[in-house]
Picture (cartoon, rainbow, N blue to C red):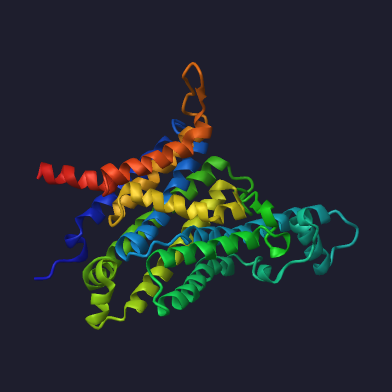
Length: 388
């Protein structure tokens, strides 16, 4: 008798149960309930961490399971943020403009309103006209569609061109990094239509909810991020299990043999690459309203390299390992760079962690690679085997 998916993968239920318990605990201890043991700013930090865990899972599937070391997946994350950020900026600016024009003797025309909105948004780069890419910025439904559609199409086109040419290994990694760099450099230009290096800001102000306290907004985004992470974990666990999971891991271990067995390797790789890009876009759309700003620096190649480091530290080839790595590094980064870690006075030099955090992260990556090649998740596996 064939067992169900959850029976074959009990770790999925364990993960979802722990995530639900964590979510409930944070909610009850937040300022929304009046207890206030967890501040609103830290709730936002936890919400952003859950989004980073989601993209880390996507990275683990494409790298840890399929063997494609993509150094461009954070670009899809940033695109998702830009897509939702366009609607947030447009709707918020529209409300401000309509309120300011309400007291005029004559009602403003649609063109005057559009020009005023454009001037408010693009005045910082010396323009007032809406670029073509803002054509759907006034529609939340269409921008939500763009959150998934744009990263998916970009990954589909790029992946089709790369995989059909059978580019693999380090060459493919370089191509993904080049794609990310090109996109980042383009967005830095003022005429890109996305405000250049200023990016999109004020995203934490949700149109229509101006009177709602930030404590409530933050917990809503936290709950949404937790739901997305749970669904994403379940979805990817289903993807990497069964026959498809076996083929995907086979491509990672010996692509030529899988092709010899009659499988269309390029189709599997393209499916994984595109699907993970879409999920990365969704994660970005949830992350940046909590961060409040998105700019081209978020899409720079170094961000995707950090993502690979998170997965490596957590243990690639294990979905929960990617979550552990992303959460561990993200929370430590917030502590070290946010002033939580005390400076260390060596007498001849004062170590300030805001300056030395990246050095510590690099040393941690080297240490984990040399001493624990299977990452933190591998240590957890060893502990479970010893207990059993």
